[in-house]
Length: 189
Image (cartoon, rainbow, N blue to C red; front, top):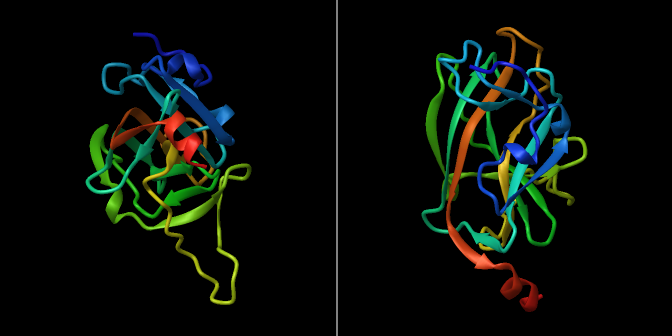
């Protein structure tokens, strides 16, 4: 199998009507065809990236992620790294979730029920969490999950390079929610 590592780019997205957005050090996320290839499928690998988020946006629809909405992804991690859900709302606000997925031993498929996630505001340029302004020093933010433009994943720690030190692989990501035509949400503003 092919083992060359190249930048993870739009052409790596399997669904044609989905756009990939990069935040923080996402330009340094690489593809990984497996090391060894027979055990790790093609994936986004973050060993040489700083903190980042990769999100995905349907070209014609926003998402309603209320109710039983969930993310399902295939992940593998090393060290204390974890995969976290990230959302960009239709008003431009970005949030990262407190849910973490880890699987050091092997690639594993896990699900994230979004109704159970607590959210913190997210700075897309630095790929760090933000507090909410106010005297209470509020950490948690309650997003309107019925108005989501982008969904993705983040690693808030820098990678440690090649080897077993610290990184994440994300080999597949599926989002289960309700599509909302973008024209309908734009007209409502």
